[in-house]
Length: 143
Image (cartoon, rainbow, N blue to C red; front, side, top):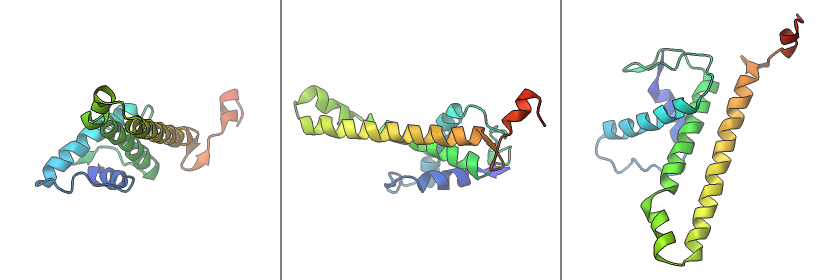
């Protein structure tokens, strides 16, 4: 079994700002992290371990690659949420301030880069087993 805190720690290590620092109750922050984790699980296509959840953690024993992929997808969801805040979007409709549009463009490119990194981690994960390349010759009947 893998506790959620391992994935949360990996996620928090990937972000620069802790938006939950001002929250009064840690359980509220953990509920938010759980929502981000649920979104990340939906994006992780073919994990080799069970991502079935219990009250305290995952049923499966997640290793570093699975934890890092989930943390990366959590960061993508977090960035997307922060990028699409009303404060960022409303300026597009209220003003003709190109600096704000430039900021949103840069943030969108940052999000695209994070998504690309998450997909790359996932791709590496699919092509290897226990850190070793998969023997594709086995698919052709080789040994």
